[in-house]
Length: 261
Image (cartoon, rainbow, N blue to C red; front, side):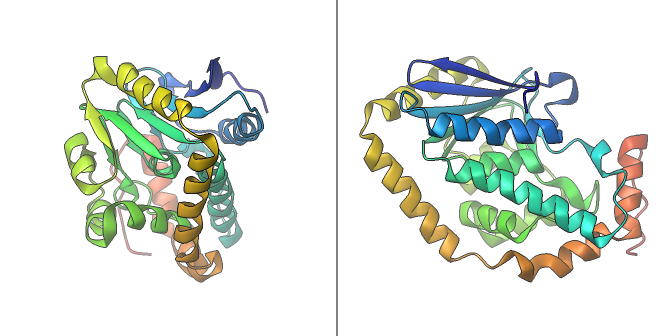
């Protein structure tokens, strides 16, 4: 589905997908998620494209999660399960795209945006970037089993628990130390460094890169639990009074009042 909020630009063998909703820190709507999936398919089948770069517009965020307004209507256990299932499908499609991907990150990268970054092959960020999944202090919802697994692969259980339990955002330096990003650069160097990575990969053997990417994905996928094994935990969060309070508090721009119910 075409949307002005996701823009595709081709430059020789390098394609750049830009999340273009800077007034909302590039928070994702369903049309934006759908556009990303569509571009994944188009770029995967384009033999001229060797590398895909993802970035956010505006210099303040890569992607600040999903647009919270989309949670207002959640009422039943099916709502939360269906949401996580749909997000899983988007993130999985990005992870499976048969071209190397680079997340060029400048600014806040949170929630679903952090999951999208984690699904990319490389992550290069600026020194002013911050990373996290602050749902324990904002919405009171729960990540899917697949997204837990992606973060576990990158940063391990101790750092993931710190990220999820505290809800705080990691600095760029902390993210690099944890293994969440490959490299930290100054903002004015981001385009140059990402371009160097992209050009290097574009010049290398595409079948080797494709096979390596898929082999790594298969090994990681083999270690992941089935989605149904996390369903009860997702339901418990998305059907809670705390989740409804978290959404309303976010929209009201006030701290949530948690009750554990």
